[in-house]
Image (cartoon, rainbow, N blue to C red):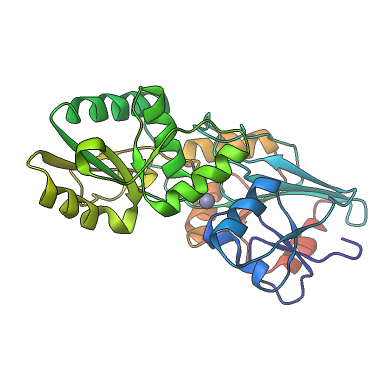
Length: 311
Ligand SMILES: [Zn+2]
């Protein structure tokens, strides 16, 4: 785009600007090469609070628009209407059609080319109704903390803040580990209302949220200090596919499942869909079987070549 070569959530040696759709670590590789970035302010704040990376946000070029992606707070899609090419492109990193727990609701836009994430490429995977999942989490937490402790393992960025909000809305204030607390503060700076405590003695912290990798150690530490039973829990979209090693798993996701992906693609009504991510082939195959012109994105020069068939 004119003076800019924009890398999409990835590292590309020919790029001089990184589009960072959101602050999850698998989307920020481009920043190691380019400090110049297209992203939301909150994405910049979260990335900088968790790493030694510095982002310099550039002003959106005229042909570019950042649209809400509904995934985590600050997540955006990149929409480009470039007269030079004669077609429009919408790129989405992680996104969801469902009402997010703690993010700006997704905006759709009609585009000729859609480049879309393929985290859940399986047609048979359908997420549970979100409001029922939230009710279940609140019910479980309330019930189990009457006589015991509950420890949630969660992604430090995004899921942990959603759980804090869900528990707050049921009148509970969870204790969280330091890394989660740091992200909570960035969320609060950007308007989220989150109430939480630092990790302390088990008696004053009946409900705890820690990073996924600390779940078992935290459970054992509480067990060593309390005679009450300690329950472990996880809230993840992957609970539809995996059995986690916890007492209970809730199907809470901030991604699109396959039905949501179809809904999203239909709303954008692209001529071609390019899928990317580790399941891009499978996702493209299932889309093609349903009549979409869909293929995994291997090289961006392919986009130009293929669009010549349409314009
Ligand atoms: Zn993500």
